[in-house]
Amino acid sequence: MPDIILHHYALSPFSEKIRVMLGYTGLPWQSVIVREMPPRPELEVLTGGYRKIPVMQIGADIFCDTRAISAEIARISGKPELALENNPDEVQQFVTEVDLDIFLACIIAFSGPGMLVKLVKETSLMNTFRFLRDRIDMGRRSRVKALPPKAAKEKVMRHIDRMEHMLSHDFLFGDNPCIADFSAYHSLWYVCDIANKPVLAKAPRVKAWMDRMRAFNRIQPQNISAGDALNTAHQAEPRSVRKPLSTHASEQNVRITPDDYGRVPVIGELIAEDDTGWIVARNDRAVGLVHVHLPRQGFSLKHL
Image (cartoon, rainbow, N blue to C red; front, side, top):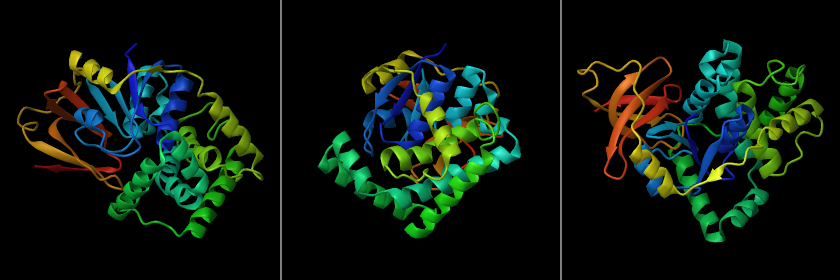
């Protein structure tokens, strides 16, 4: 069983998505706590600058974005339903909506004093001001159109009502969870557990579903330092690539950038690609050779 290292922070909704998924699969993992916003110098050595959280590491293979992370967890755990591409179109469309539109609506509608108080307790008052300034700057650079708060709240409440009607079984698309459940969970976790908003008072099925999802987060990780993670990468070699590009095709460096927000690119040598993602090779004196895995969905590639 490969050692999974998750680079994350406590209040990160997308990190919660992966923490709960790891709990569901029963996979052991190691935890590296990172700052809520850049700079994250040790993590940047591994990713080449990618700024979103979480990031998953297995030896010298680095997985960016929860799409790539979920697909790798699906492969390791033998649960293919956790990878977006293994699900029917109905599930994929639902996940695409909740991972971006619904998530952003939750952040816009329900980010208030309660969330800031929690952030101050987790870090410090000065760090909270820096976090807010960072998120404002990231929003200005975003290509995603933000809704006014009232419209965002209405969108979230319609989404909850839709889920209430979907939940004729224990989970959204049947008796067992799939990627849709974990994608829907993290936004409502932010609203209910971080912002402390009672939005599920008239949605008993969704409330019961949330309790089932929370219960998966039962595995206590082993805490390690960022330096330990760098040493792990330095002592490992990236796993072999199943379908490498031809030598000629892989000679060019590429820039791969998120399309929505947090638009900091990863630059390196493209060594593999398929219908779902890319693998970029990077060399750094601190860790040697690493392979960075990125999904196609939500990202764009440019040859340099």
